[in-house]
Length: 584
Ligand SMILES: [Zn+2]
Ligand SMILES: [Zn+2]
Image (tube, rainbow, N blue to C red; front, top):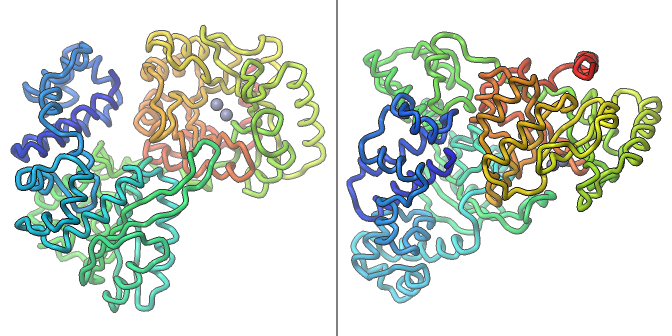
């Protein structure tokens, strides 16, 4: 069982406990453990088997250890089974309604016996919900709107979708007269790979005018709450139709908080989170005899007008939002050892891209011109290999024809250099899809798994490690095959894969297609620890998708990566020399 599944089980236990009305501290303890496991670089299952899990997750109590033991052994988890049996599935769905938490779900159940969304909708319409103590007509109406939202939208949206929606929203708010500052906060600012809402913090001369503008922006599907300084809306927009995306509408909650100018840095910091990071900062304030909250740093007389001033007052370097996950950033920030994070402008070229020769939408020349227009120095082509016939994989003859085409293009075009690569399939037994003679002719080889996702964890791990041992392989493509919110990763021991890459001197790709973001930030950080170079690749299938590499930069920053640790920040000559040395 991998960490993500283990963490999901702990999350579920926490939520179900809340729905059962159990003590909040006990459910929160399960949630904290979920969070710890999710950010563990090692396999929690292996740590458990080795008897060292408590060293890594110190908060584990007896019950939680039992839960891990049962799940790791592949047994059913008695606590989880019991909670599930006692919880109607409809109660979990109700939690997705904006403004409805475990307490409200319990009240609806105890007062009206409601167990499903349709029952809840009917009870709202008949006025029964409005009559419950603490609900009222307004709440009932919001719940009805919320049901419509929940049944028409997913739980979370991808980072790229949220960035698109939030950017447009922010532009409109900043255009309102008297708005001096408006910024994105929350997990979106920290660049989590999926988010469940947009948080905005702003200051304005006339908060009422800003709130009025916010609740009437284009794309508002419903207004969940509207006060003097705070409002919540549901936005709806067409999803960007990338090649791997399902398209259709996405719905997303957006919250605006308007604060006084002096409160702005504190509110921005607080609402950016994470909760774990906020705990670290609050503790540092307490250590100095001060008190930090979303309005002020009480007791401290330093002048604070920006977030960075808060960190300085607390005796630490500024922590970039992407690092605020409670995973050691406070210690590094006070020791002055935080990395200078890689930036989008540092990226000089990309290696994994497709053309019309396989399953891309644009020609080699169009891709090269688009890469040049983006300011890149080199564009690596990685069309599919022969056995991937569904993606029109290239035969050896077609590969050689493409090499000639690339040579001709390079003499014709200036300002961009096209490199000869391949996205070579890793066959089920771990061998490669071209013979060694042909592989030796490429500048580099991206090796990827595209078939037989159902192999066992042992088979898949051995398969990928064998490919990494092949001398022709330069880098591993999309390491887990996951599609965010759509397809789970295949079973694979990533620790073993990263170790193999380290052993054989190979790189690992951060596939920056926003549907993938694969390798994820937790394992990128592990790769960094082991000195494995990461490569940010857009896996572009059209000229538009070349710009995807910026999403990979977000992942890299969350993984603490600086420019020298990302291979494609190197200039062309350095890359050419290195690739040549690797083939020698
Ligand atoms: Zn691929
Ligand atoms: Zn690809």
